[in-house]
Image (cartoon, rainbow, N blue to C red):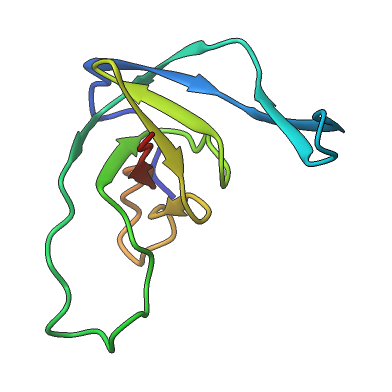
Amino acid sequence: MGKRGSIPERFTVLHEARVEGGRDSMGVPAVTFAAPVEKRVYGWAIPGTDQETRPEHSGVERDLDLYCREPFAVPKDRVTIQGVAYLAVGWPEEYDFGPFGFTPGCRINLKRVVG
């Protein structure tokens, strides 16, 4: 199998792991985030449309695809890119197990935080 790392990680994003614990004054589980950590990534892109090939409401609804060497965000973690906050949706998708020995890394699906 090939070695990860042949693609330069040219950009930096902030990753904040979701931390659950305790309850707020209304008894709702409190959600906070760990201190932000800088992560190097390959880049990001708006996802291409796949509505023509997928049944309605299948797949992962996302606003941005984040490409990186190593998976670092799990569902509901916060990732900030150029000052815009997103939440990770679904688990990172690793592409290192194809038949050709190419190990490009992974994609993390992100949904923009509104409100």
